Length: 250
Image (cartoon, rainbow, N blue to C red; front, side):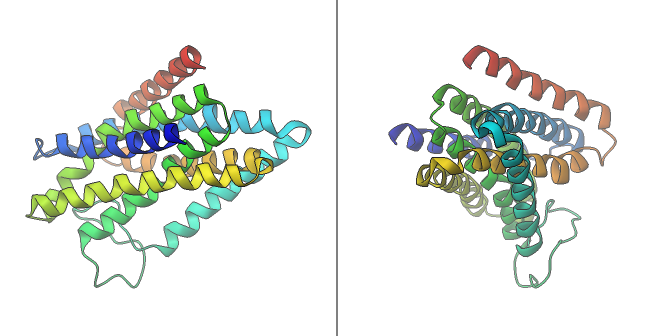
């Protein structure tokens, strides 16, 4: 349990560390942002496939493919439901708010909600990894998530600073996105520990949520500003780094 707590704080803390570094950057170009987010997308995609989907097949036994496919679609549909239900936006500057009934909410808060939707499945994935009992693989998942959280934290600070003049308010918002990840870690861990029979579906569910975020949000966003080639190679770099980590630590 102590290991899970330390990991949860490390995964969430990586976002906060990145946010602190982000205060040093006042103007971040679309190209830099796209490459950083694509790298994060590659890490998430590899973590989802290598650390969650494939283990789901292994733990599922004879009916593994059924549990895995069911879990993947359940995770994707859950994120899709949250995406439609929770008011949020993906960019602070020139962004269209995607849901209704949010006229009284500030753009900064809406952006934090978008980050929370993104970070929650990452936390769940880390927690489910430890719930599986495979500590080495769990560390690969958590390490990969922490690795991509730092540059991601750098990128989210600049638009929030542009919208909010108070650095203290911006920092608090960034901390909240990290706290969401900590909460997600414990949700994933305890969900699996309630019943080991849920493990194959839970692993695939966490993987499905991450794949959904990569496909629905990260890839379209990083290919929208003319940096498609650089973004594609950044995604491959992130994926391969996770592949190497999985081989060395697995």
